[in-house]
Image (cartoon, rainbow, N blue to C red):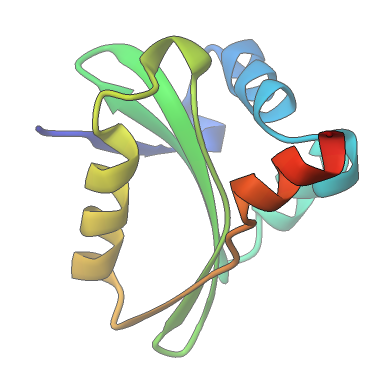
Length: 115
């Protein structure tokens, strides 16, 4: 599976990117989008739009320091989930970066709070 990673600022349809971001993360889990865009101008930040062929399937937002990458956001468009894209993206990241930091919430804990 070949995925293409394109810098956010080089993508034409930024509306889709913003929609994926807002649909994927609860308000309490996300920064205002303008902050992401502003910080993405720094050399230590990668804000990628992920394509499968010519279709936007997701985004990642990575903060880099030396040989460490912190994956702050990874989101797959809701219409493209459960197709192995998230796994492929994580595999690609482990090839690109020596050390990756992830912060993953427990989905079962979230379900227990709702009940």
